[in-house]
Picture 1 (cartoon, rainbow, N blue to C red):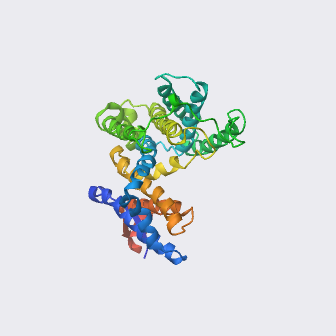
Picture 2 (picture 1 turned 135 degrees about the vertical axis):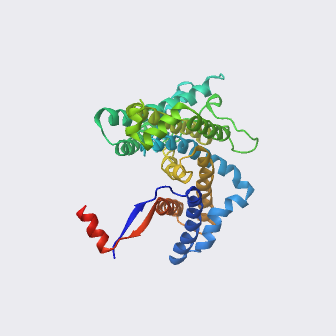
Picture 3 (picture 1 turned 135 degrees about the horizontal axis):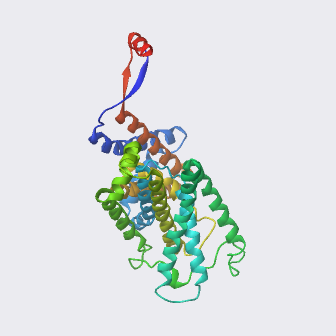
Amino acid sequence: MPFRLEKRVQPSKLMLYLTPVLAVVLTMVVGGLVFTAIGYNGFGAVIEIFLGPLLNSYKWQDLAIKASPLIIIAVGLSVCYRANVWNIGAEGQYVMGGLAATWVALMTHGMTGFWILPLVILAGVVGGALYAAIPALLRTKLGVNEILTSLMLTYASIQLIFYLVRAPWKDPMGMGFPQTRVFSEAARLPTMIPMTVVHWGVPFAIIVALGAWVVMSRSLFGYQVRVVGAAPHAARHGGFSEARTIWLTLLVSGALAGLAGAFEVSGPFQRMVPGFPTNYGFTAIIVAFLGRLNPIGCILAGIVLAITFVGGDVAQTTIGLPNAATGIFQAMLLFFLLAGDILVRYRVRRVTPQQSGAEARV
């Protein structure tokens, strides 16, 4: 007897918000079983990855450092996705933001002044926004899918890093390593708490999320984004331009990804290195969906994904888990989240042969 998916008229709001919690729980259970089956201490790995960073107070600063770029990038992506604009290239925009910030830091190397760090951060924002403008231009003028263009531009930005740190920006005193010189003090992001690595980008990530929540829920721009994403035909009749919305959302998303890149290169890295791309842009996609495309939800989801990063590093040394384990858990989390969304938004309906025949005749 055939079955088919039928969209629910009004999905349960309770289930919409419980689905991310259930996805995390299923990830822990299934991940433990999978790693046990291939010969590791699976449930020990789950404890180390998901609970270890929370129980060890020394890891809290690492959680804050990992969560802040994820939150900032995810907030920008949630704005895009609300408008049905699918920016998959936040990693590339994050990289270009870091490169733009590095350029300013190198140009002002040896100088002093309170204006240098704000200029470094501003350069990161502009660099990320300009890189996001490329898929916006191609989408609105030529109809090219922004998923493909934004994703492919990510790999171009990574190759640009490799070129710059091996040739024009290479540190002449770096013992041959492909890296830039260390930023001068004026271009570094200061730490917020003495004797820790927690920098001022951490509270700024919370400010960005709260500000985005206010804008998306209380402003005309937020209303425009929601209407264009939910009902583009109605949006046109209401005077909202789809092309303008595509431009605005991609620029906002790229600017926030570039901001995260500027914070990272001027904070934890303090120089540009080939290892600067850390998949924050791709992981932030999971954060955005786990947070239900809500800026406040992105804060909680960013902490959850930061836990997997920090816990994955711990599990490699304590249990001997492979480096890819973190990515596997994150992929499981996304799979269970999307599967749960399908079950919440759709229901399985059994169709009798008589009903199938009647529908075919209609």
